[in-house]
Length: 191
Image (cartoon, rainbow, N blue to C red):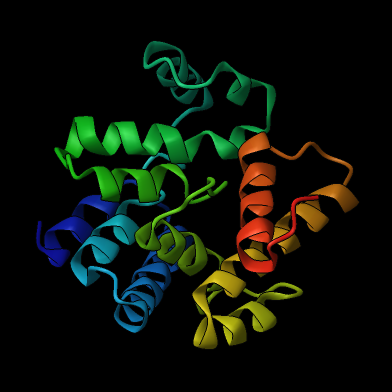
């Protein structure tokens, strides 16, 4: 699918502010893909569609989780998490994208997962650091992204977990498992 066609599709599914965010994710993802040896075209497509389901009604998202046998524990966590795995399913079903790498990059862009591929890391990180993002810690992650993809994703995960803990809200197990996976791989610790 060509970029302009993909952007035309996504523009109808997002409010203007989120569309601008998507453009930022797209540009950042392509830069990261180029820098870290990832397929730029796949990064571009995954970035464009990463928030495809974000503005669907909550009940629709819930129904897709049930109908497609996604992990039921998703329903025990904040609905903000639902759009990523549901989005991967809807992008395949409604847009016809069957590339497993692209679908997984969409599916795990909010939580990560142990053993993330380079494309998954690129989309996860691009969503976190795109130029329109402005929050405590984002500059540090942007700087790390210039030097080391692994450390940048790890720092983004750590920041996210700290943020959620400080707000005293639950942390989705995939995020914790992903954090632990990065700790073991980067620092080589077992506990």
